[in-house]
Length: 351
Ligand SMILES: *Cc1c(COP(=O)(O)O)cnc(C)c1O
Image (cartoon, rainbow, N blue to C red):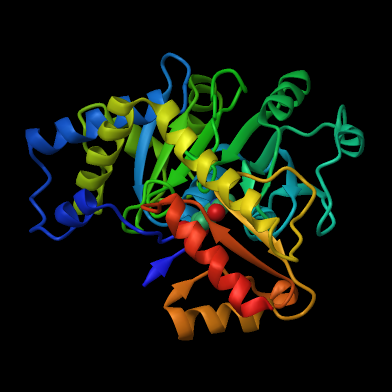
């Protein structure tokens, strides 16, 4: 089996070793040390501002999306959602579900984020911006520096879902004025699903979180208090946190630039070789987390063929995009030669 998916992805041998072991009891000094080390390394990996706070949640990335929203947004807010696909839509649905006032900047399928269009939302009384650093549904990458400046100008809280972009694309939390930034364990960290890591600005904490109590399980106040001594309020996914610590330490020891470059090399190599095939890719800027490939009407057929015939998993899309696109992931334990093999098989199956 070979996974060119965006999560879960091919795991590293060191992760499999840790995840396969007996889970330890966690209300211990030893485990607290692990949690403090994850905090230090995660905040460093996103270039968080001084005094940024950290929480680890036991939930998938959508749990972190919901937690970020309910801990910062309230009924007096006017939320702006950047909706360029399935994950932007999820942010919109979260606002709707919780009864928050919102509007969306809707990007039509296949089109690039348009700054001129977006500027129409400036000075309109919006107080919170929700965006996915990479809209994984289409692989489109947004300009976080520009969006951070927009939020500063408009005095908005800036919430960034970096679930798929983290480690694939460089992210600078402080430089981009990001208030809340999160990722999840099954994407570039290449771990089992179940852990979300969240970085929080001091401002988001003091102006928002301390007053927001809309969820019991996800109330950041409990997590922030507990994390001061390296603990979580409830039982976390202990084994996955141990594996998180190992992965983050390795990434920091090798330098984060090496990790970014690894993903960039895979994406560039694959996109270069794709030119040998009669296939199109979108014209908007793509994240290095995955490459979106466009088809006329047979994407789903190709997906099934690769799965059944070669035990290779490409990333399918649902709904209207089922036959229109496939995504090829660049996350996890993959080598450039894996992409060469994929290109050869695509040539064989498409001609
Ligand atoms: C994968 C992903 C999520 C989380 O999805 P879950 O299935 O809940 O883990 C959230 N946002 C983005 C942009 C993602 O790519």
